[in-house]
Amino acid sequence: MKTAFSHVLPCMLAGIMLSSAPDFCSAQEIPGDSKEAAAEKADSYSYPALTSDVLFSLIASEIAVQRHQSGSAFLTLMEEAKKTGNPGIARRAFAIANLSAAPKEASEALALWSKLTAGTPEAEVPAAYEALRSGNFDAAEPAFAKYLKTQSRPSVVFQQIFASLNGQRIDKALPLLTSLAEPYETSEPAVDLAICSVAVQGARRDIAERFARSAIKAAPQNPAVIRQAAIALMPLEPQTSADMLKKFLKDSPEDSATRLIYAQSLLAGKQKAEFAVQAKILTSKKLTGAQWIQLGEMAEQNGELKIAETAYSTFLKTEQNAPADERNLAYIRLGFLSENQLRPEDALGWYEQVTDGKYYVAARLRSADIYQKTGRPDRAIAVLEQAKPKADEGKIAITTALSQLLNAANQPWQAYDAMQQTAKTVSNAPDFLYSTAMQADKVNDLQGVEFYLRKYIALRPNSSTGYNALGYIFAERNVQLREALRLVEKANTLKPRDPYILDSLGWVYYRLKNYEKAKQFLESSLSLRYDAETVEHLLTVLTQAGDRTAAQAELDKWAAQHPDDQSLPAFRKKFGLK
Image (tube, rainbow, N blue to C red; front, side, top):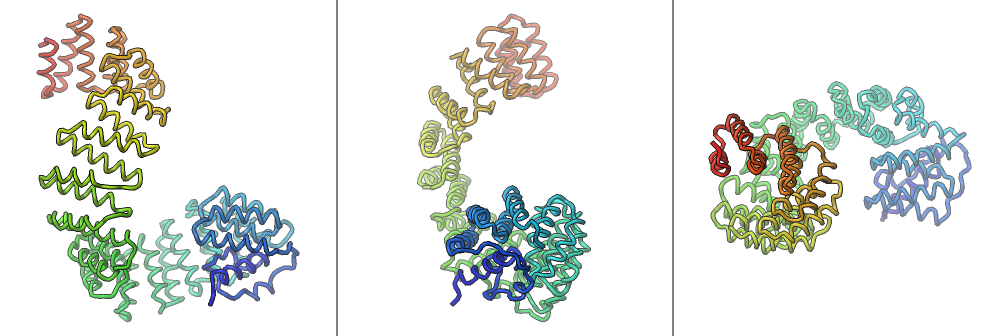
């Protein structure tokens, strides 16, 4: 019986002890046997022997990669490469960083690999990667072409080349890639598929289709290759993708996996009627759990709601031991479908099935929304009050929705209490603290306003929002006016020429009875954003300053631009203007 180590050890021995061994193999990529052919080609350079301790570290790093702990694996390999001077270890560190999209770490490992191979034939390979990463494709090609000839699995090298490009300069790199791939065209489907995928990224339909067809030609009876070729080609050529799959299905009509991809290509090509035909056929097939979910999602996208319901329901019947979150996703989707078909009670039944996991909060929110929309606000509030989300994000989402319902039910203090309780249990949630402060303002708890806004400011000291809000609220209540001025001036420094902040400055100066400065800031605000609240502030300042002529002119200007504005009668009455 082979263990994980039986896969890892050949990789380490072949890929690290031999300079010409398979490039960048991982525990899943290397077969159980090592490569004598590669050993025969290896140049006789003497590298330090790998002790049992070093081998243990290397094996541990491979296990870390399998567990998606690439950062830990990289650090271990770099330490061992520096300690032993073995270039194969540095090469593996580069591979891990490169495939993990960690350019800084990849550069560090590449530099070490280059240093450790200086003066050896292998030095051409890190030099080629350096040329590739700098965009010097002509310089990279000869070394890669030579290197590929030593590899039994060229697709692994191509994976590293693609990763080095990091999605950049694809169009300029395609000539290099196609040139390197030509010797393997129609004989190495993995290489053909890789080139097809990159060509799709570069929006080169001709190259993408060419290599997709080459992959199928290399393995015409291999359904996995045909499916991968179709998937790779689908974003650019959904019709060509569909034609490939349809041709294969003529001879293999019972291949449900291929039929599912065929349905996907039809959907991508907006062939809705034919998709519906294929989707209905698939409902009578034996699919895996993931395939039932995929079919349901595609059917939803195409508006085939009954087929979607069948897919999700079948998943729940056939995959009773599936992970809880997979089953919860099906419950959520069935709930959405029931809502869309105006069956609220059915939807509630599905949502109630979700009792934990990452869809728990969504289920509680949807249930509350249904109760609210169907005239049962007390039930909506109860659902959210009884919810027990575990993560801070979920607590905030539930409490925010609950506070909205309580405010709508004219229970602002209960909303404030709920928000305060949540604020005590969540960390680093400045937006929620701000919302809690605004709720405190709504119930006239000035102490609470200041408490939560100062906590917000502590978390976001470079944001103008907290300073402006607290300063304006102080001014509105005519308290702590010097502190209000300091706060709003700080906001203005952080965000100059903001109409809301300028309005706040004007209002603070009005409270300080500096009417001239108040007028200046309010007029500046109106020059940037002409709105009713700031007009009202300016009318207040002008009338308090005794300049009723200017106040009348300002009101006439507002009336001319907003003749139907509902605030006009109130302004005329409040300020005694015409």
